[in-house]
Image (cartoon, rainbow, N blue to C red; front, side, top):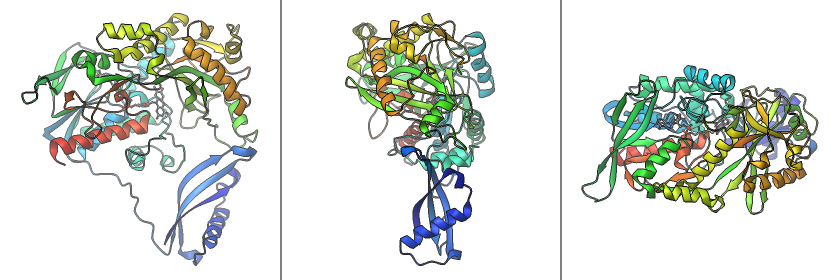
Length: 541
Ligand SMILES: Cc1cc2nc3c(=O)[nH]c(=O)nc-3n(C[C@H](O)[C@H](O)[C@H](O)COP(=O)(O)OP(=O)(O)OC[C@H]3O[C@@H](n4cnc5c(N)ncnc54)[C@H](O)[C@@H]3O)c2cc1C
């Protein structure tokens, strides 16, 4: 017999195996199950921290086998087969969606040809360092672009609210197989950490190459190879991609049975390219814009753990409120983390957050963002998009404008910043504390240049958040702006069932850039699903 059960203990008892075994036995007795102790094998499943009501508790979940042997994990690692060169799928982008799609194709020996505009992680690190030291962003190699995509230099948080579309367990197992800590399989809120992610990503790349796939770095897709369909007049079929080498400028064409487009939500050039070829394949969608809020870590720990911070990991928080009919909420909270410069073009500033596996920096940060619906986008950007021939791009123009304004109020990649209390008092901060944001910060009254629809809701939002999280508004909280890339403002329309782009046959938009996924795990799941659809449709697998 197998029984799933939970026990609750104090944090200091986490390693007290006799107490844990005793509590497990008590739970089994309570359930009226007859057993003798020697017959029990308990397999730890998940841990979560409950810091509500002023007392910290750990909830531990176990699967207990009574008189039975534990089964093999349901999430075993698949076997990858040597690629058949006659079955080729072009995968644009080496983020979580692209890499996991490539591995999925290899399960049936379909050859993935991964095209990535950015560099391999060691070289990408150099470009990332230069953002802080020189204030320069390389348009092809930065926090968003390069091996592993936007997820490589991130917190590597691996939780998703989207549980429907795939097997999260198998994705976590894949990450463990390629070098992530096994803890991610049992933590309720797993994260890999920016120090560990590059190794995992490099191992995935090596596996793809070992199995006969290709990975091309420094190779930017600049166009699609398109044929008009003979059967269906006016319909376009994507046969491959045209690329430009970012180092040599040399053009090259890659042809395949299908193209998975996993270029992430930063790739404005891809949206603009599609808007020229097939404007009706794009639609605008809601997105969110705001600021990164940074507090001293000790302060957040103390608020969340009610002062009992001893032996506790850096505390997380998640806040959400409604202001004037729009959501104002926290996003990508990084306990013990850093605010990072994640612009993908040199003419703008964008901030985001990351942390190491240990989550032990002096600060904790989170984005606090305001939901922007299509109807909230100022008319000037809708007009600009119409002029360019595709109204769906309005949000993209709005986003770019905010990022460029931030650059005007910053200095190089030093970002505009303000103490939260000064923001609420509508005055520029006379002094700013040291922050985790390495390019530096420049004092700026954010309300003077952040669109009013955002700043007014942030203002009210902070006050609301502070009602439930006392101490959130405080003299030490700093706002660093702007956080514009929580999700894409554009969706590439695809068929619900087949995942194929509605007007561009053989093109499979996947991951965050498609507008149907967000975050590492959900983008990975989306990439896997696109690969599965291609296998079914083109190779009858
Ligand atoms: C600093 C930071 C921290 C984050 N932290 C987390 C976190 O902790 N947890 C979480 O779930 N999510 C996090 N995210 C978001 C997460 O990284 C993304 O949701 C995820 O990476 C999206 O995966 P993707 O594969 O769809 O796209 P991406 O990861 O964006 O990958 C797209 C790839 O396509 C390439 N590309 C773009 N255009 C072209 C082109 N024209 N030609 C060739 N290649 C191209 C890019 O270089 C890039 O490598 C973070 C993001 C950032 C920037």
